[in-house]
Length: 317
Length: 289
Image (cartoon, rainbow over the protein chains, first blue to last red):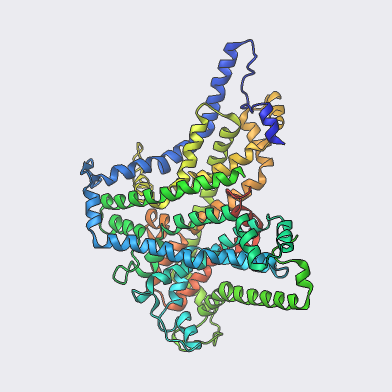
């Protein structure tokens, strides 16, 4: 409805002069006044965005090519900062761990919310309870959730080893072993973020027209076939959007290694964001840290760009 | 409405058995995965350190000792942390609304020259996660350009960056765009100023989206960890998450767990009360809105 109206009459700004007005001076004055008012309304936002979003982007690039002690003006050093961080043995680990963390989070955490949503959508009882409960961990402050799991991972009396013991399985060393530390971080991260995906998928599933399932069933499609040929194609774009969002989110992983492992054991859980933090705040090297930040930014921009394309495509549907 | 499984199949005895099995498995599974950790946390806090270290663990605490909560409150100065966090979240909320609502209104209804460019530049910030800009943003807070103010350890270090939120501007602008022009034109003809129109016409009809933005902004600031960790390093200024994390190493296990329980109460309480708005906010983004 609104679309057709807008085609007929291009929306005008409030207070915009009537183009047929005979008094051109008045029109000009009004246009200037309108712009002044508008920028008056905008100025607070412009200042906040300039200081904390736009300027930092430029500053990051500048910092990563400078040697800086923040007393004297920074000294341009070309790619020295990049060479320093790339030569760091932790650099390789950090990227591999970040990629592994994202990959494992996809393996463990990507399909699960979708499956849960499909099941939840079929249930006619306990709906409110299940929806509430699945989102509960999302509401916890992440630091609280992570510290809670730190206790669960305790190799002695921690909940997880006790549970393994109860079913007669050998205990694991969780955070203390190079082979299980990273996956332990993935488990916390998945637990505390699962609810978001589940509820978003659930909303998407509810918009699938029922007659699609009906006709598929009439054509003799079984349950799994209906999921494959109706549910998944109908939610394809949201699945893709969530995939990209999850990659971008998990590649910034910081709080889990910061609070659980400190990057150890033997760099097994160092991530790019954590290494960036260490460079700046433990080694006092903002140049190296910014170089890492810039590299991560470029990688994430690739995914963000694809995300933008996909979500625009969806908006047009 | 018809879903994946047809209502007919559910009515057969076979279908009913499957349905109830799936239902019970789901309820038990969800309770185990998402509620049990909370139970374990609350009951764990009531156990003595000895009982916590005991193998196998006791399911219920032997003697519920509620004094641990008082101990956590005093030893970790949780009162101070909670008050700080409330100040940061509350101020960020007011700032976010004041800054983003006026900006969205200007971009949606006043449409100045270069307005599209400004909007584009604000939305572009969504492409770059704040984490990768952590260091330069920290330096800005430490030494504000031009004014050379040090915002570290002041609430401004939380409030100002919180207001620079492209997603909120986008949500608000999209809502304002849907307000019919006739409503505003009538007021304009009556001689109402743009500020007056915003206050008495736009804001009252925009309550749903303002509710969503309000809750999102408060919860985001409340849950944040990395930014307050950097910009509020003084113990007396710390937010609840950072405070507990930085003091966690020196605490007896049961006191730490009790403090985790206390720290998780506010957001969970908010969720109980504003569940509807929070879930609406979840799908308010790009998805079919």
